[in-house]
Length: 373
Image (cartoon, rainbow, N blue to C red; front, side, top):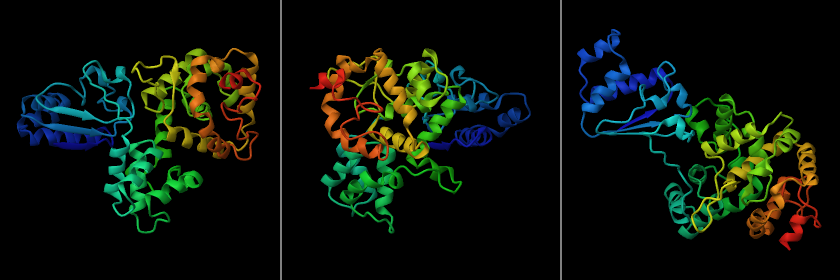
């Protein structure tokens, strides 16, 4: 087994060469690649295809287009990422776009852990922090998100932490989310330490989407973070709403690209009802993605007036699917529990605890509220 962390093309080439040498590559054949008589990736994979059983983990490939070499697309399988051989190449990445990885790649999305599994992660990291039942409750509060579970476990195991038990940490999340899980990038430059910060990890994904031309990914995610914790119709995200809220020009195509990009990077999902059929045309955010995104928006935009006005205009136009039955049915079970948290998100703004269903909220006599009744 070989574990390679992506830190650039040069280091990847060096480490893949070492793996090939460990699998029997001769110095004579390697010298041919060094002399330019053969391509180094070809020589390495030639040996891997001859070697016995092996596992190579290529970790943190957040920008597959940079793997190369020479701008070679990953899906062409002529660079460092290739299928074949008698081993397995496992690549971890934020980018879940099937077209990026090619038809011979099997994509597996890392999903939230069940309460028992998440509780065990917490117990393994901080065995003195409480009981299995308390760990499971904290896991549920964190939505089973592996990154959040590891962050909580590291915090609870640290000797100087203020909150030393699972229960104390869970209680503190409601009032200290920003410091516990929503911290920005630290002053240090250690990339591995930075990647463990949840807020910054998602910011990296949004930065990558922007670098790839998906400029509306961040504002679309922020709009969704201000909705109730339930599936939302994609049609709610009209170009007019996005433009009015964030000031950036939007079209149906650019909004669609933003939604699909956020899905490819795992920042939103398609809800799946009990019958197992994905709810086409609807999207949903992980609870922590919603909370921390709204926290970031509130910190960077103390006055959310433009976001409120944008929603009011779309509501007045009457062309949103916000009041249609599927969304109402999805929101209704979650409406009351979401109100206190929504009120905290909007502290100091125009929102109130009973007006939280959408960005500004809906008046009690609005059609949406009448249907909920």
